[in-house]
Length: 155
Image (cartoon, rainbow, N blue to C red):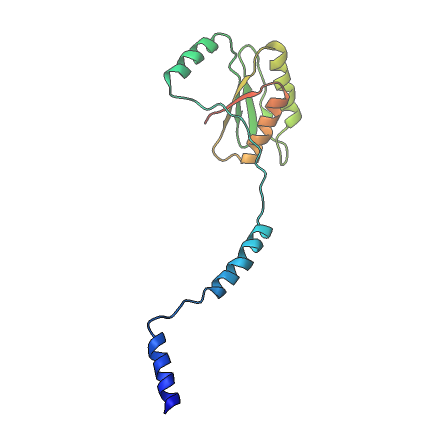
């Protein structure tokens, strides 16, 4: 009878004071966090400086002053061709080759603009909505290599 009373006392006494066992949860986190850190893919993001249109008044005043000294170069990217427009120069369409655009032809046309307007550093790229992001990046690289570091995207 002594044993039975002892067990009943222990059961009654511990019924309201149960502790939560956190050991299993801590073990999961101890294994999960290093595993996630080891398997995480760290992405290197290259920063591309772009000039986007601004709505402030100061931006409008500076663009009015710069408009007199800059040359407006526009490069349109379409599904089957590239079209380059610059004042005073006539360019043929750069037709798309089998799978990719004719990048050497684009580079030659950009060099023609640079030889006629050596102070010009601005170009506006106007892609169609279905153009792949990688294509826009290649066009931006071609423009930078030709001496046009100030790239704006419109469209």
